[in-house]
Amino acid sequence: MAKLNENYLNLKESYLFSEIAHRVEKYSTANPDKKVIRLGIGDVTLPIGSTMIHALHEGVDAMASSDSFKGYGPERGYDFVRNAIVEYYGRNGVSVEADEIFVSDGAKSDTGNITDLFDKDNIVMVPDPVYPVYVDTNTMDGRNIIYIDANVENNFLPMPDKNVHADIIYLCSPNNPTGATYSKEQLKEWVDYALLNDAIILFDSAYEAFITDESLPRSIFAIEGAKKCAIEFCSLSKTAGFTGTRCGYTVVPKELTITASNGTVMSLNAMWNRRQSTKFNGVSYIVQKGAAAAFSKEGMAQSRENIKFYQENAKIIADTLAKKNIRFFGGINSPYIWFECPNGMDSWAFFDYLLENAQVVGTPGAGFGKNGQKFFRLTSFGNRENTIEAMERIEKLLSK
Image (cartoon, rainbow, N blue to C red; front, side, top):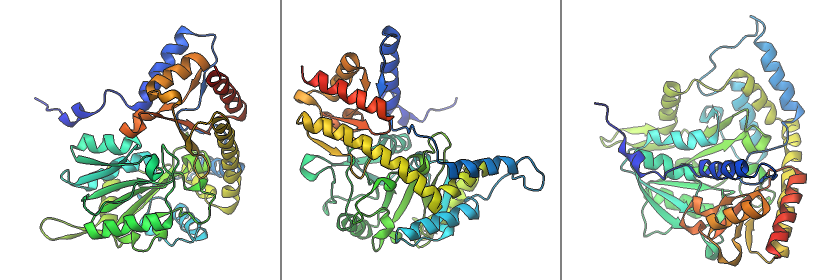
């Protein structure tokens, strides 16, 4: 008889965004005349820039000729993409090498799949609130997860406690869901902690392109010592609008090693390459053509205009919350605005209240952990008209 991976019994009944979709569908079915505005899931709405579209078309055209046709690609990604990423990092003052970069279908996949490299007995540390994928994928593997509090007192930027040991540490900066962003000094404390504990930092930098404060690091590798203890995940989903195209990358430094129980020193770069070449067949040539263009100066300038648009949406949201004297975080170096639910409401209760009375969808903070129970997340990825209308509805509702 086939045996179940019983760790799945320890998962919550449904993934956060599946539950949101279920509630919205139920409401919309019962109220077909109501226009629902979605500022919940972080999906972009602006089209991909023309530089990337042109490159995608070049990739398609290449498939029409035997002279330029591409089949299976290199397991780490095509050189032209990885070299473009190297140049992009260099423009941001960070040095990485092409053979440390692995092109993938997105940061979400890689932050989950990276767990294949680690024994289930590792102690995993995650902040609370936290992006659910970090918790769920380790729960599926049966690992022990410990939480560190991210809260108002520490501006949702928890710092390491030398009296608490962890083997694997998840950090996300700019953070999803809170929008908080670590400084270089704060990340240096985390790197020092990881080195002291022989721990690995799994650093999610999916929203680095939203950082406008030049003093804030856009990569963990801007921190001295990080290449000995960190893996970085990034994505073009929010940087260049590739949510429907799917492309991201992971940086695994060659100097990052881990020692097996028999004393063998293993390269995590080599291990990840072995894992990917076994379980993943790579991103399509067509998408990688578009990705390389996204990292060019022209492509990044076009994406920067889209990001500026979303940042203006964030300001519209923030201004409304400020007008109603609601405390909030994020929205400056992040596309997310994290705010306290009015009148001390529970976040799921506020979700239902907002949906039923203003037809606006956000994300309940409780879905990200216990410290999100009284908080709510809105995203700036809607179109301008809907963002303005949503905030007008919320302002009117909260004025009653």
